[in-house]
Image (cartoon, rainbow, N blue to C red):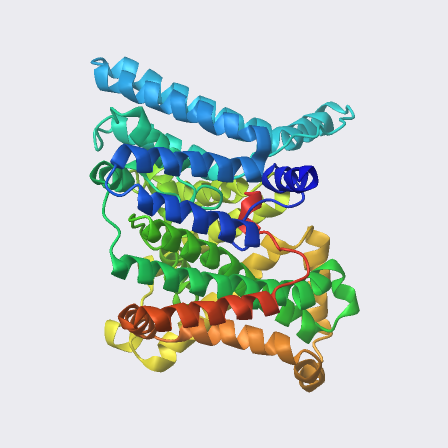
Length: 492
C-alpha cells in the first residue's frame, strides 16, 4: 500500500522531464475525473469556479512547479491595480497604474527570458566575460503577461469595467485551456462569460470534442511524426542532405509548426467549450493568404491583433504619415519576433516579416492589379504560392539554430538541388510524404468542409460520437512517438 501511495505521489507531483500536457494520458485521466466533479456541481456557480481555479493552478504546477506562485502574484496584482484604476480620478494616476503593470510584466519577461541575452550583449560591449545564469523560464509567461497588460490597458482606455470579484479575475487569468500556449484571450471577451456562468449544451460538448480530436491528429499524427522522423534530422545537419531534401525539410517545418500550434489552439478552444466558454479562432487557414498582410490576419490571430492594439497603435499606427507607419509596422514585428525568445534568429525572423509587410504596403500604394484580374484563379494561385514560399523562407530562420545553418540549407537548395532524388525521397519517406500531404490537403480544403464535418459530428448519436472519439484516440496512441513531444509554443 505504501508503495502504491509513493508511486501516486510521484505521479501527481511536478516532474520537469514529464510536464502534464493536453496530449498526455495523465491529463486525460485527471480531466475526465475533473469533468465528473464539475458536472456534479450543477448550477452552483461559486463551487464550479473554485473547482476550475483549483484544477487550473494544479495544471500549471504540473508544468511549472513553484512558478505557480508567480501566476498567483500577477493575479492579485492585476486585480488590485484594476480596483485602483476604477477609483482613480486623475489621468496621471491612471497612467501610473498602467506604467506599474507594464513595468512589472515586462520586467518579468526581461529577467526570465532575456537576462542572459542582455548580459551577454553588455559583456561584448564592455569586453567582459559573462557566465550565463540558469534562469528557469515560467511556462506560459509570455501569454499570461500579455493578458494581464491588455486588461489594465483596456481599463485605462475605458473600454472595460474593473472586475469587482477577485474570483472572477482569478478564473480569467488562470483558466487552464489557454494558459500555457494561447490563444491570448482578452478580459473583455471572457469576463462577461464568467459572470454569466454559461450552461454547457450537448452541442457545445460535441463541438468541443470535434476540435480536440482535430487538434490531437494535427499534433501527434502530423506534426510530431514529421518532426521526429525527418525535419529535425535535416536541420541538425543540412549538409548531409540534398537541396531537394533541405527544401522539403523547410516546407515540412512550416507544416509541422502550423499543425503543432493550431492543434494546441484547437484543443484549448475545445476544452473551453466543454466547460461552457467560447474563444475566438486563432488560425484561419494561413497558407491560403495571398500576401504577407493577409497572412498575419490568418496566423496566430490573437497575438497579431494584440500587437496591433497594444503596440502598433500606441506607437502611432498609421496616423503620422506613411514613413512613420512603415517604421511602426517594422518595429512591431521585430518586437513580436523577440517575444518568442532570447535569440537573434527570432529577431531576424520578426525583422524579415516586418520588412515583408512594409514592402507589401509600399508596393500596394502605387501598383495594384485591377479587381477583376485579382480574382482570376491563376493570379490567386500565383499569389498564394509566392506568399507560401516567403513564409517558408521565414520559418527557416525561425527553426534554424544559426545563420550558418540557414546558409548551408540555402547553398544546398540553390547549388545541389538534384531533382532526381525526388523519386527516391518519396519511396524512402513514404509516411513523411503522406503526413505532409495530409496536413496540406486538410489545410487547403474549403473551410465549409471542416464546418460541415463538425456539424455532421454534432448531429451524430452519442454512441457513434463516442466510437469515433475512441477510434481517434487509438490512432493517436499508435502514431505517437516513444516520448511525449511538447508543444512547440510551450517554450515561448
